[in-house]
Amino acid sequence: MADDRSLTVIRAAVAEAAAGRAVTDETPLIQERILDSLSLLGLVARLEQELGVVVHDADILPDNFGSIRQIHTFVSTRSLRAS
Amino acid sequence: MTAADIGVEQESFDQWLAGLRFWAARADAAAYGWGPGPIADLLGLAVPEQLGGSGLGYRAACQALATLAEETGRSGLPFSLAAQMWATQEPLIAFGSPRQREVYLSGLITARMVGAFAATEYEAGSDLLSMRTTATRDAAGRWVLEGSKTFVTNGPDADIFVILARTAPGSALGGLTAFCVPRNTSGLTVGPEIAKTALTGARLCSLSLNACAVVGDAVLGQPGGGFAVLMHAMRVERALILAPVAGLMSRALQRAVEYARTRRQFGRPLAEQDAIRAHLVRMRLSLTSVGETLSATAADADAGRLDHTRSSLTKLHVSTEFNTFCQHLPDIYGGYAVLAESGVTDLIADAVASRFYSGTTDMQMKIIAEGMGL
Ligand SMILES: Cc1cc2nc3c(=O)[nH]c(=O)nc-3n(C[C@H](O)[C@H](O)[C@H](O)COP(=O)(O)OP(=O)(O)OC[C@H]3O[C@@H](n4cnc5c(N)ncnc54)[C@H](O)[C@@H]3O)c2cc1C
Image (cartoon, rainbow over all chains, first blue to last red; front, side, top):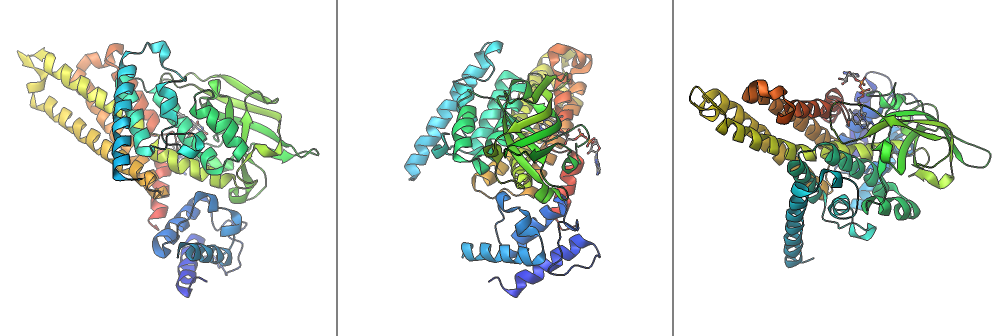
């Protein structure tokens, strides 16, 4: 599993995209339009820079970015594969 | 692969590039089109060997596009080739099924087929994700496309179109799907060529889709995965679509230097006037920075570390420098700048276009700002 640091980074990045709206780990980020195409690119850039994971274009699917929980699961599998 | 192998490859690529230069400088204008020979070789440079390309990579491909533009002095053909390479071939490489690669990718890289990418619509330009073209499944399991597309580069000649359509309401992230639609599909109407004032030789058109039905295996990637296809195409295209610009600028600078050396006013060549020399030096500065930026970006792509920020920075920087470069030209040519033979206003039109295709300057700024966490 990815460590707590990755969850902290993901929560912080999503909170910025949410611009003040309340977000839990389960909030549907795409349906509620908290993540749009541009903020998603920003989020991907942060995950790559701060967590060192590589996000391929083919990974940009709703199932991987639907909520903080899903992003965390996705990052965990990526970190495992990389190590 | 050993260092010796790489040496041999580099040597044979250099030889091939010299051949391209020779061909491009001498071929009859009518020969500049899709066909076997140097153009087909070029189309396969950045395609992995196991998929039928030569696997020499993005840097080699960008060098070849710049060389073609430099020697022919034509912007349209290299733009058309680059559009196919980055927006049609790349998505097929990354997302294509074995059958799609077998039929379409191999056709494209042998220049037996022409490919086009259709995302933009009349009402969905920068706001691309507001696109209205839909695809719905009918009782027989086919996808039925309805809507229209515009600004489709290569559309008038294309055999295969990669078309983005909405397949579910709500966010584009899960609501878009990419389709491979062959030209002869019933319900697909290819419009007449759009008259334009830049990129002469590149042909664009609109498409209309009326009950245009394709079978299930026309989906490129996954149903609902169109956003990923779009992001992939845009990441590579934004980074490398301006590769020919380095060649166009190099040619224009050589010609401007020659003109300044030979044109005499007040008893001496223009090239001896400080004001003219300053223009030429600034043009050299723009050219150097464009060449180095494109080369470093293509090397990043070869190393598999091209991110969206780098792609957008490259698009923004090269298009900005191309425009800055062009602003100097009229001051060197004087009144001759508006004569067709100088090619100055054609190049200025190409520079204007470069600020808009593959996402406008404003859109690149937004992507870069997001990547900076702003
Ligand atoms: C030569 C050429 C080839 C092309 N080939 C293709 C192709 O093969 N396939 C394809 O799908 N598309 C293609 N396009 C379309 C191209 O991607 C669009 O032209 C581009 O995305 C901009 O859309 P637009 O022209 O509708 O401009 P608009 O979106 O109408 O923009 C007009 C101006 O407003 C600015 N603007 C808009 N919204 C904002 C905002 N929110 N904030 C700040 N400024 C804003 C823009 O930056 C621009 O300066 C091509 C275009 C050209 C010129």
